[in-house]
Image (cartoon, rainbow over all chains, first blue to last red):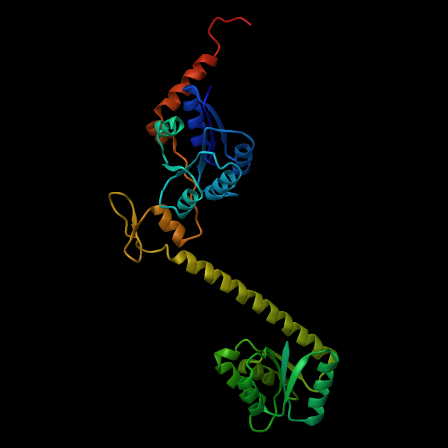
Length: 116
Length: 215
């Protein structure tokens, strides 16, 4: 069965790059540039991995991580950020995110996490 | 708004008090300029004043000059009342620092109208001061990003005031209201995700109509 990935990021090019490359590799990829829509999707569906950008309008990645893991403690969340020392990225890890991908991240890193 | 009155003549003072009381103005009455200065010393919140010119000890002109010398009282709106109504007197009164001038005997309605003019000017002044304060606060916030910023020539980190090297984004966020959203420019998309363009190109080629096709 195809492994399912969800990506929430307000930058369209990041979403399109991940979706295009990973679908070509055989993964199922859902992407959302609207943070609230992405959060709802994460709460209503099951994914093998959820990638969340940290700095977004409306709601930051730490808050989204907290809300998803509260409802689904078994969900596997990774934070994506351009600078890992961002206090919000640290807050997301404290909230239970499994790890951190530094932008621009390698697709291979995502696949590693999907294999774990 | 509190009004400070200075009038040595009992009848005129009473008349002023009655007019102001009837319109619910809060006021303090003084008999001469010296009393006014003492009152201002103990309570500096007066914004409006009506002074008679001719008073013993310290007359209206001397009083206004003394008040205007003090920066703390420069915002007080002052109406000067006087029986002297030659053009030169008006000029002398206004030059001394009065904001308005009324000849005695004054008309009650005209005085009230002039008080309202003063109130309007004070309100505008207060709104302007508030705006200046807001702009000054905003300027203070962005001023920290002016001047020479020490940056590492290698990794592009910035040295903050405490001597720590910070990421550019962190430094700017700490010193301004700006926030970042990290995307990728087309050149970096090609550099970091070369397969992205390849897949896109392949898909475009596949979806393009083949030459000679007939629908």
